[in-house]
Length: 165
Image (cartoon, rainbow, N blue to C red):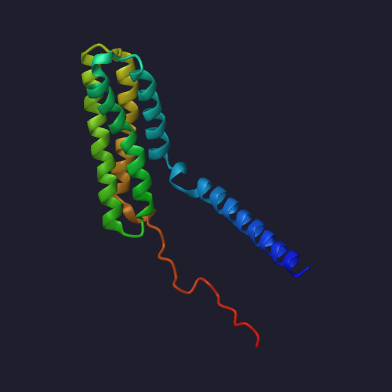
């Protein structure tokens, strides 16, 4: 009987933990970096580039195709890292400048793809305009990091309740 109580309490504890984990996941998905315009647009562009590059010639697989895919994805990834470093402004800005550099690199790769006639001028123009938007959003974040700064966490956030003797 005692063993059944132990299993039951473990089950209840597991269910509570699962509920808390689910709640936190949903909360941060609604308020995290995925809700910010720079991330949304750069992620959308990374997927567009992925699909466009499927039609690139095989001889470009390990050069232009690989490089434009990597640089476009790197913007989103660095943005996620930057968001987690908001507590430390210099680190936050440093990661955002990495995003901005990758944004510029992607634009150059796209220009090369256009000049090699792997994408049309209209495709290029449409994508470049969106990358200019991403660059402007990143520039605003770089110039005004305090607007995005995370509040420091208090060391006394967990209340310890003494156990009765």
